[in-house]
Length: 109
Image (cartoon, one colour):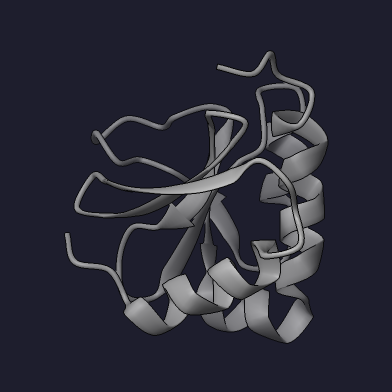
């Protein structure tokens, strides 16, 4: 699945001041990693993908624009898709902070 390079650039800019961020092409899109752990990315033309963790999955789904990630045809608990337009309207940086609260606590790879 092709990704939107403009959305990737917006996420790249939002992540630019965080230490430990790397970028990798994965799943037909672009993913960002924090200390080697998957953080989020762009998987298609209209959504961001964020790793929020199992404990905060339901909380994430109640945020504007979020929906379950079903990349494999099954819901992937701990990951969500977020409508890009909604994320940009409500604050992409807030999604980055929400995601960093989980991924930042993982053991570096």
